[in-house]
Image 1 (cartoon, rainbow, N blue to C red):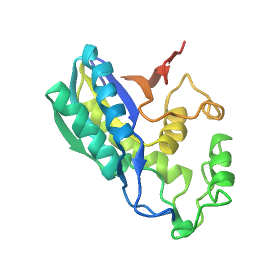
Image 2 (image 1 turned 30 degrees about the horizontal axis):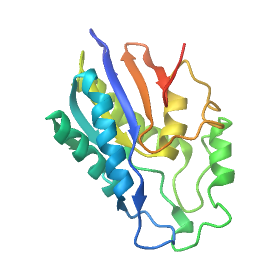
Image 3 (image 1 turned 45 degrees about the horizontal axis):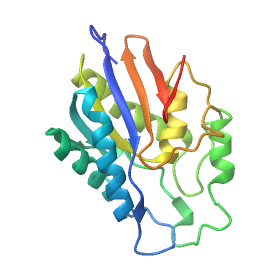
Length: 203
């Protein structure tokens, strides 16, 4: 990040509950269920007091739809960035996902081994770098403003734990991110600080 005269406040939210065309794993975006739409509306209500200036979302449909519902409530624009998407499924595409093909790699990431790679997919370092790049763009673009980012549970738990200087990499191990859950971040010249995690205030 460039030198920030006034910190940006960035609220990163997981998209609403989604439905998918197939039970097989893929990188397709899915779409919001009726509950997911209600979760998005609830998110918009929760964000209203924060005076959100823009909504940024992953390019996956479930995130875009969540962001558009919130943005319509708040009367702001939506910006889409591929770098905010969930980690890719790699070689697991087309499988049932049972047993969990990502468990070992994700556990390694939360232990700090970001060289670990989803078979046929991204390493932790690659996921973190693309995510960091977009968050830094947001912080530089919206100095002194509040912004909502709509993203995905897995990448949020890994990347935000890595980026926030007051969190450990293992912070999210027992704290899964619910649909509509929010992490509040502040950006300053020294990097990122997490102020809350899915409703729990942080020191």
